[in-house]
Amino acid sequence: MSAAAHAVSPAASLTSAGGTNARIRVTVNGQAVVAEIEPRTLLVHFLREVLGLTGTHIGCDTSHCGACTVLLDGKAVKSCTVLAVQTDGREVRTVESLEVGGKLSPVQEAFIECHGLQCGFCTPGMMMSATALLAKTANPTEAEIRDAIRGNLCRCTGYVNIVKAIQSAGQKMQSAAGTGGKA
Image (cartoon, rainbow, N blue to C red; front, side, top):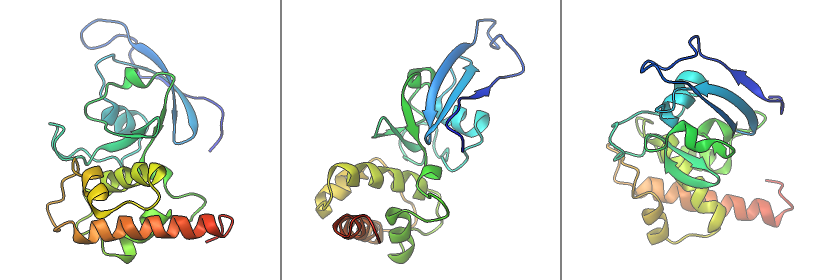
């Protein structure tokens, strides 16, 4: 993807309520995006419907499930609780940013290897919460992992393999850092 700003324009220049659209400039997965959106647009809808980044899931529409978790300036947030206009001038990372150049991230690899997913619906949000945790805590304890994913609900597992996957991802990342970044 190019580093140049990608302009996204809706068909209408007025919101459905008759107001004016808001112009935002946001970096999404390393790409600068300029868009005009309704001020009431939630980040999750902006990502999915405007940018076509459907890896961010809509699960509950009540902020309880965490399936829509993304990173906003490196912090895990539920994108159903953030207005897209609040991201103006900021950086957003979605699950699509984890794979780089055809190579899965350590978090993605670990979720596969440790069977940290079942149906996969919660997985993008879990992976983003794990990514945020591992960025600040290289070797988290089980308690720290469970605390980091407490806002992400999985209806299929007992979280044991999810915790194992996050621990494994941390170990993979530490090993890669110890070898000069070569895995």
